[in-house]
Image (tube, rainbow, N blue to C red; front, side, top):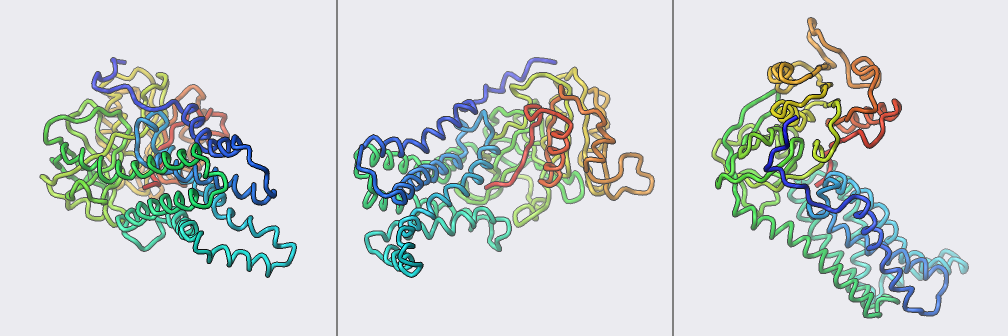
Length: 451
């Protein structure tokens, strides 16, 4: 294989284990600072309540940093994994913070449920606790709205604005409440910790909503091509107005904003389907699906665009050279065609097996190009259709375990497996690979389900 493109910079970011360790340290620091104060122990329920909210609040403020698209943090882990962690950890911090006031009422249960309820009502109606109560209610609304965003009858832009403003309000109100009434936060060290972490959290919002758009304003792109490549799928090709495209790796993705101000909230993540060797041009393959993408085919040539990227670790960078198995469903083939294009240019010496599923023949992306790539790579292709025409020569059905057994009867633990497609398909394929003793370290999956 030829040497990597010299324009591909070393990926920034903190090593995964170190990032996990720093996150744990950040979450536990308030407990340590509280313990070092040496204050007399209170009742079990009060100490449990304080401990949970100290950890939960630190985790909440760390959420801002996780969602800030900081490649200096997530570059080596992958922002896709970081955002999935961001969504999963929201459950834990929600529980920690929501039970905080409730635990204060537990001792009153000895006097009966009415006494406990009266205690809670008194607490929630106290003027001195008002900022904390408002933050508590906002958090109770914000986390479920984030988890179930796809089911809400709200435009994405409206949700994103409300999510950002709501998060900022929770951070400010919670900090005010903590510094005003927190048992341990009178201490200057712990108070300083909260002020610094809250400041960093708010600065991360400034980074996403102001600093990044300002930088993008100075590096606009133009649409130079928009063509249909399969049923309801389009390839949009961009070129930087100044001719300077950032380096990226085949398989990565970027957030795109077409035809709006750089400060617009209308931006969405899409996989890069072109090869790095095609720079300064860059292409994205996009399916009509949803409020924004429904209009994707009507974006005219010449439209100004803004790009935030590249992001993601769905690529070969830093991985050993091995045989490859690429498994895609539908538009999940977009990053994989970019990888195949670059592999062909680099004269990849190892076998590549593509398993690509669709519902019918008209949905197959880049079919002629796939056939041409077979002459440039040691490429085996299984095009799988669940609704094939009568004369279809390839596999027929969905990418179920039975189908994978037919296409790949003996999966090698020495190969690298790249998966991209609908979530249900990916869950099924990952379970199938695990059942066949393929190590997790050999599986690279790309999921798009975050803001």
